[in-house]
Structure formats: C-alpha cells, structure tokens
Amino acid sequence: MKKQRDTLLVVICMAFVTLCIAQHKRYAIKNGIGLQGGVTQFDIITDNFVTKKNTGFIGGLSASVDIPHKWYNVSYNIALSQNHIDIAAFSLVNPTEEFVEYKLLTAQLSFLFHAKLIGSNLTLDLGPMLQYNGDLELKDSSKEGYIISNYDTLLTEDISKISNFNVNGAVGLSAGFGAFRLRAQYIYGFTNILGKLNDEDLNVGTNNNKFKGNQSMIAFTAIITF
Image 1 (cartoon, rainbow, N blue to C red):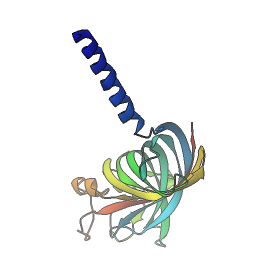
Image 2 (cartoon, rainbow, N blue to C red; image 1 turned 180 degrees about the vertical axis):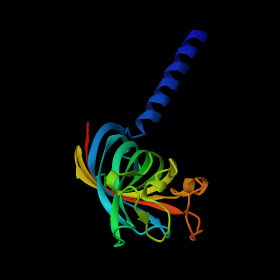
Image 3 (cartoon, rainbow, N blue to C red; image 1 turned 30 degrees about the vertical axis):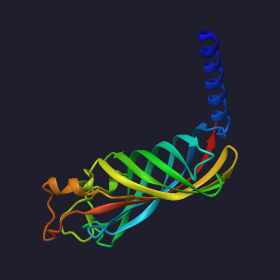
C-alpha cells in the first residue's frame, strides 16, 4: 500500500512539473559572431590646437546575443582602427599656416546595448568602451620642426606622447536584414586624451594653458554575422 502511495505521489509531481513547464513559452536565444569593417572620421575637441577631422579605416569582430522576448539585444565588440587627424602648424621658413597630418592606431573594446526600434532590423546602440591607442605619429616626417599654431616654440613632433588608455562612450544606429547590417556610430572620449602631454615638460613658450582634449570619432561600418 505504501509503495502504491509513493508511486502515485511521483506521478502527480511529474504531471505538475510538466504542466508548469508547458505554461512557459520557449524562446530561442541566438548567438552570432560578426566581422565588421568600414571607415572613420577622427578629431580631438580641444582649445589647445586648431584641428581638422580626417578619414581612416576600422575593422574588428563582434559577439552578439539576440534575445527575442526582450526589448534589447547585447553585443561585445573589439575593433582596430587607423585614424588620421590634421593639426595646424607653420614653419619658420614659410610662416603660412597649414594642416599637418597625424595618424593614430587604436584598439577598442566595447559592450553595447541594442534597443529594438523596429525589431532587430533597426536598433539604437549605446554603451561603454575601453580604448588603448598608440602615440600621435606624423604621417610625413618632413613636417618635423614645424611650430604648432597657437604656440611660439612647440614643435609638431613634441605632441606625440598622448594618453594611451582612454574611456569612451558610444552611441549609434544599426540597420539590416538577416546576417547583414550597417552601423553608424559616434564615439566620444570621456577622458583627457592629451593629459599625458602635461607631464612631458614641453617648451610651450608663453602659452601656459594645460593640455586638454576629448576624442571625437565617427565610424561607418558594415557587419556580416555568422
């Protein structure tokens, strides 16, 4: 008799668990690995230099999580880019101001939320980003010895040792169907990318203003997800 009661109890418990599970809808959470590539426009927002944005290129990988029953998706992204920026300078031989081109290599790691505006076909993307970048490098070494505009003695090669670790915020839009997407993204630097120059004991002449600047970057990329 006891054995029958135990068997009946097990059957009732199994039936109850089965009914509970059946009441919950199952969702297929999709993971994907994406390849991305595109172009950038880079600038530094600063009062120290006269700058002009220039075009570079970017490429990287993304790991995305598509969550059907949520109003957002998420992704982890790593990107490498070579950016270019023009900074005004002049030579003692020819004091006419001209823009001197620099290049800057960056590696960026970001975690993005993708708010669904039209399902997963159009999303608003935003999230934090960590960045490691190299030094500012003159693209044309013949421009060494030029004097940076707004300064009397600061040379073009003097401003290369900028801050290498920076924290950014990213916001943008992604649109596409299936495995293909296009993304437009604005990246702003919260930290002072020129801060390290204040520790370099540079010859700045009569201009004693502290170096301060924030990165401003626009990236247009195409993404294919597998």
